[in-house]
Length: 219
Ligand code: E4P
Image 1: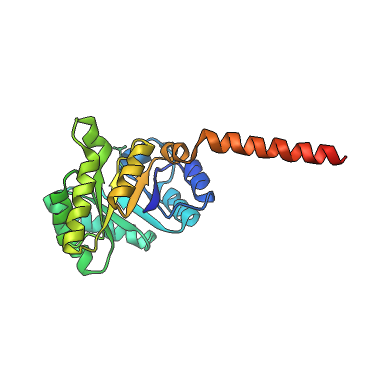
Image 2: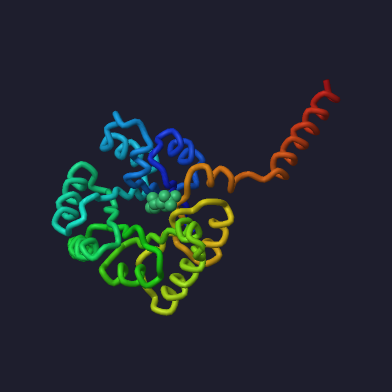
């Protein structure tokens, strides 16, 4: 399972990318709005792409098919490597089909059920993003939605890549990795939490202490 950073914060993205295990970034209008409003969003996204080098999803904000297609074309003019992120609404599906017919990668977002994912895949989506944390928030099992989606993908050999999104904690990451999600797009703080183990820290402290003892004994 690949790991993307779900963020628009350049400092966090740069740090996560420097660790060597990140292969993409997803943004959305809410994440962008959390950053300094004076920021040039195009420059920020291009900087993110220069930093990570892999997948970067950029979301459209129109709600009609022609508006989405116009925005997608505008984005592709200044960022040809973009994956166009499109909300799962009927107008969005038509846009996904049109973009797929032209070989443009799409990430269909705001999905909460395996059937929505199946429909998006049939519309030609390259990536299907299921929001598991938001399901948990309303007392519905988010991980189960990923498990069922992966089961459907296995049965039918579907090609769209399943992104587990709206990840809230390391246990989500573990569960979606076991279920078979292709990608988990993860907030920076959850990536940092997932790396942490007290025995790693204690073990390293002991190794360094013992090494220092040997060095001191020789001097
Ligand atoms: C995915 O692409 C979304 O940006 C994201 O995972 C949404 O997560 P949230 O529920 O934490 O806002």
